[in-house]
Length: 150
Image (cartoon, rainbow, N blue to C red):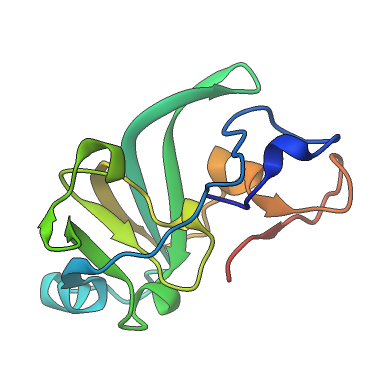
């Protein structure tokens, strides 16, 4: 979900999800526009971040955490981000994120949260574990990591 062939890397900052040569594919998705859904429920003035939480959890740096990623409200409202419940004309299977997942076309796979349990809109910035794990940094102690997006 963040690159093909990670098993071959000699220096990895994290040990989870060691993809081999088969980490990508193409699919036809069925769902609704996240932007249209957010417009329908109403995004309050001052909203800044949309946080997506999946049902999967893991341990990173001795902390148990649910998988969460975020988009800025501006990114979420572009119109191409989708809430999906079907893949290739069939209901999603658990291995593909059933019952509902988000798809963020053109971004690395980890932005497309599977097994979606909640969507939260906040007024401040948000930088959780999965944002920290999946970011670009010059070294492990780089104080200015950049989120991996497109």
